[in-house]
Image (cartoon, rainbow, N blue to C red; front, side):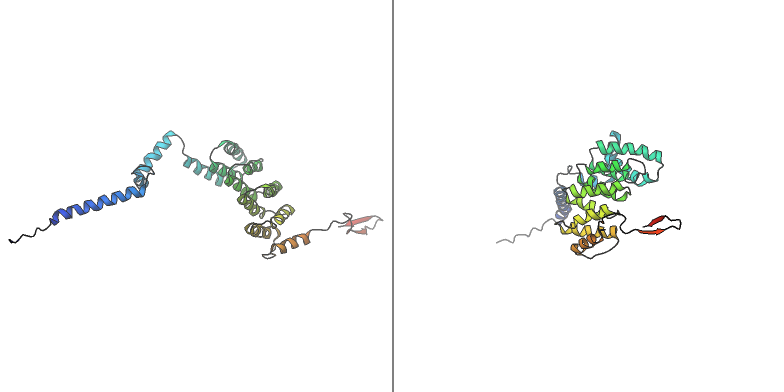
Length: 257
């Protein structure tokens, strides 16, 4: 049998195919990874700033973007407290319109945040409207904002929200905000929260009571309830039962309380 020559493969051709094959496989994997977000160039648009800048410019030509509006409202929220009364009153009107009409929950939330820093009359009313918003995050922001206010109405609104809201997140936001107030209203409201079935709510109520009362009665809610009940002043028969009456030297008497 005649000797058949061994045909060696053309290594040059294979070397040319190898980079092409690797590149083709990589391209397929990239397409599969990117999915159908925005066509096969979705990933490139996110990496290449040219595409981002071009799309951003197109959006700006159509009008102010949501991103810009959010940034400007965040800036306003951080600066409005340092403005004079006239400027605050002007911006309060804009905040009122946003809270009432803006379809974006985030814009309404930021408006409530800005209103919390107002020093003009009507700030509480703006924040209060956030409690009735359909968005939970707006309601929660309203609770946090009321925690910053020192008006008596703020604690009353938080107590009312705590007693009526069915939403656990809103309830906990109200509990945390009540911890920044003083007086009987937060104490009595937080005492009721100690009887909640949710351990997280009970724990949060005890933490808030530490800020209100200024004391720590441990981690047992029953100890807190007993301490609060013990501090309640007993109702006497008359308001002057413990008054001390002394003569003033001219035949009359004075009352020392």
